[in-house]
Image (cartoon, rainbow, N blue to C red):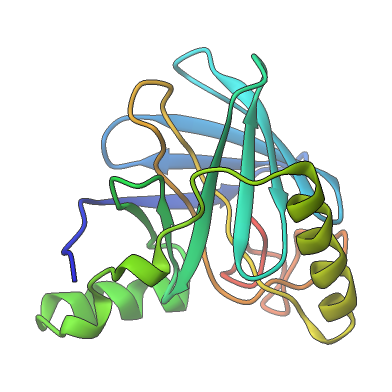
Length: 183
């Protein structure tokens, strides 16, 4: 098991229904849902692209230059990105705050195991199979994730938690972003 580097972030729902994500390392990202399983994003470092929810808690981040990195939702508002094990923690969500609390208690269950790392690469056929799995599970709620990567690090990640496949950013708590939203 590995205790990963964690980068907390918070999301703010904006009036235009997009999301402004602020990372504690100073990065910022603006996100807008493009479809039920895709979010278009750009950041304050000049990077942009899309995040696509695949099955088995895997998120595909494709940069505007065509490069791809994968992340995996590991629960408690956490998503691990790349093989370096960097984990972004959603402090906006209940799950993220619970993960921070449990991590602060030193519980080893929040360590990252090799089985939790995302794939290094997927073939187009493997990606399509995961898309089909995500579609078949969306009727009862699917897996979620999302996140940010900086071009040089091989990837950092974003929000985790169960994701509702509806096109709305709103949750049942009056419209604020929750960990039930694909970020």
